[in-house]
Length: 98
Length: 98
Length: 152
Length: 152
Image 1 (cartoon, each protein chain N blue to C red):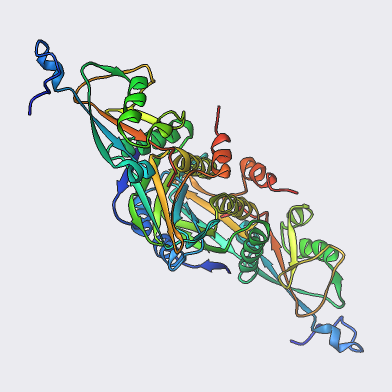
Image 2 (cartoon, rainbow over the protein chains, first blue to last red):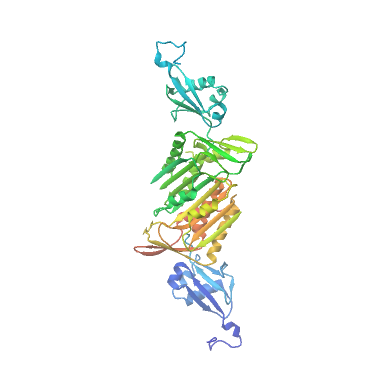
């Protein structure tokens, strides 16, 4: 259950990199509330938009929209920010207000 | 106690003409809350400003002020309006608001 | 649709008024309430109490006219105004205003308007009592300027 | 001076909140309260209920930032914001905002500002449920225009 056979075993730390992905609001209903993304090295938020879009069926379109915000560990960050293992990324539709 | 000796007894109805005068707010404290004005014939509000000023000690100054309002039977009227017996005239300082 | 404007001889209960005003309200998205409280100081110094003189009947009608004007001017559902007269201690409510409307902008504007009118055109005469004596109050320049905002 | 901004999982009790907010307040002349209620209809038709999704922690902070900004911007004493999440029935309160200030103009403006910010920048995602199904809501053009009024 540890890693997978096609990962190089010389860098075992990278094998377990998991980023928790949350979809809020309508996105959660459409794509599932919670996902886990595996990756071998830190990614930028821009990378994540692409990677999540590839992994979550149908989500690519909303991830390229500028009004879809990604926040990392509950902090609004620019698309150039780096995201590492154990962090949580939330994909936020435009706020509806209360 | 009816009328007074210098009133002509040919017009007895006019003898009993009384107008009730109320002073509100600070005016009530300074000049007394309530007065009765006797008169022999209907007066205009402008007449009343003068008559009340003559009768009520010290009140002449405030009765000539344009921001001192006289209301007749609780209705705001122009200074040309007529006031007759049995009516109530209130002398209102500028409103303070609540 | 209900417009009520009442004179109260005791302190209005803002919380009970608000609860009653909101009860069963399903068509309006917004309720704005304003409570005017007696302050313990003014520009003239400490205030130990207020006395609000009124002219019975006339004062009630001045409140009713202001409430009706607000209803005519803004797209609001209900208005409730309760204004106190007599002796008021610091911290006690002097006036309670509530406005309900489908949308919040109208509710805010109507409440704001009501207060500006009430502060200049409600028929009250206010005496402030302090340690150095009493003084009768007139609307401030700010009150008059606030009122002017709504002139047509 | 107190600024509180809270997320609530049930309906805020506007009357209890207002009573607590006013209690012992002797230095402020003005308390403005706003209650946002769930309407039983919208431009899309009848509404049988709302669901307000939120992001635990993040949503609370969005409320706190808005309340702190209002306090920094207006000469007000205290601010209390309570915003609900989860399921809401028509007629129930969604948001309670109260502002206390020495003078009423600042209290009105701060409450107005708070609501304009909350309607566009509080981290909620709202679903309206009706007889014809559910729809997720975005701020209206009016909400965006209201928010723009406060841009520096």
